Image (cartoon, rainbow, N blue to C red):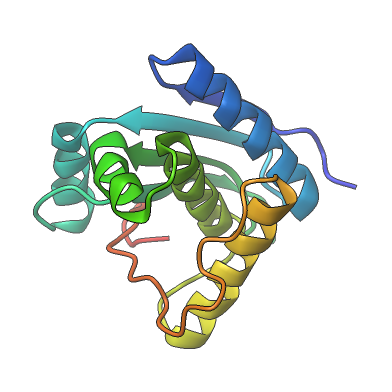
Length: 166
């Protein structure tokens, strides 16, 4: 059984914040990870560009970055932060024809999965990670994003303030 997640969300939109809280907590309960503390920040493109440059030495904004903040003796992440970019999400949600809050939830779940040990650095791991995203989104009543796609969605980057990406 999973321990409760201490979750904080920074987003000026209280309705979106409540939506993200409800769904992230439900996804966490489904995963039963070692993750016990999670902060999710919704930021603009300028802030994300600054983080992207600072931690990964890459220009421009990205959709999501995940930061490991603490780990247990076995190396499992117990605390982390996920930063999602609302400007990137707006463009992607329009392109996909989905609600902005659903795109932001996808990014938050993607970051949380990185903190829970999932990776998308190669095609096989990417398919596994996106399958888990689809399973979680389906269980949450949102529906799959990646089902039926042959090509894994390219993740631009994630970062870890301690050094390398998560």
